[in-house]
Image 1 (cartoon, helix red, strand yellow):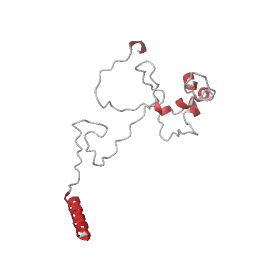
Image 2 (cartoon, one colour; image 1 turned 180 degrees about the vertical axis):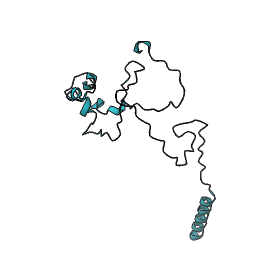
Image 3 (cartoon, helix red, strand yellow; image 1 turned 60 degrees about the vertical axis):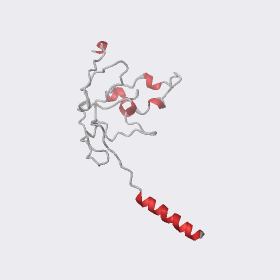
Image 4 (cartoon, helix red, strand yellow; image 1 turned 135 degrees about the vertical axis):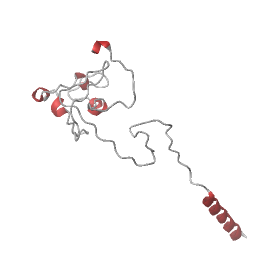
Length: 152
């Protein structure tokens, strides 16, 4: 009797698993466009073309107070990790004059507690957290932002 009940339970479980439908994955994005435009998220879309970097010396002006400066050159293949920071090869206090590059701000040497350090603060070491390259990218969405008058 126990074997019969066990076999019946096994059949019921197998039948219920076979009858269960696979969950439907909806990928409707509601018409919102992104970097992928309106491509279905479930489909592998081709990569967007790389943007062209602006040439050295052709700078964008800052648009608001305390805006980190934009990077006016190509940074592809720049190594920035715990041991190496390619940016400091030109922008450190030691090398900036010889490389004709702007020096990093003294604020990058301050610790979280406001102490001045002898080296770049660990919280400011990874430059690309704040500084981004200038490219020919067009805005994804329109906006009516106006820069601060004092910066013009």
